[in-house]
Image (cartoon, rainbow, N blue to C red; front, side, top):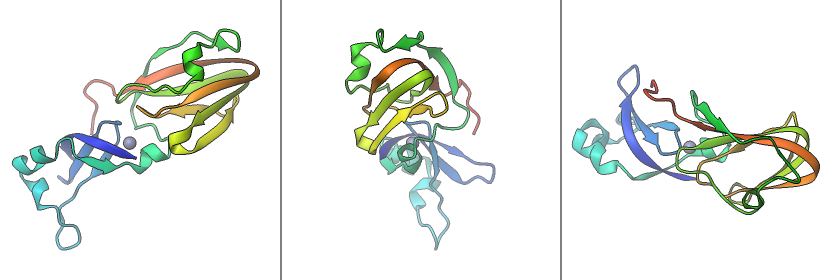
Length: 157
Ligand SMILES: [Zn+2]
């Protein structure tokens, strides 16, 4: 899926890396003649690319970015207390990932945009991708919670 460039950083060998608003990072190297991105070598060129979009395969694969930390979680929910908003399509904010952890029972998890339709259990947890619409539906008796993750402050490269 397409993600916006929010910043640029350099890796340990000074190659440029685009920081995407999902929390993933992607090299944007300028190594002519193999890879030609002369714009990345100047501050003006990089600034002009802020907000530009790149395809993020790691979002398509439900891979939470490295180093993200849990910062809040819902109470334990059941088939009787699951808020109706979770049963309809909804999404997290930019940069906010989540894990759906089932404690007992089964919970259907649907993400139409990424073509996912699975039944979560205590051993099969769900990953929620920022800004991607999704819904859950209890399949009988279930207990589960959702934990939210974001980038830690001063995240290292
Ligand atoms: Zn991503």
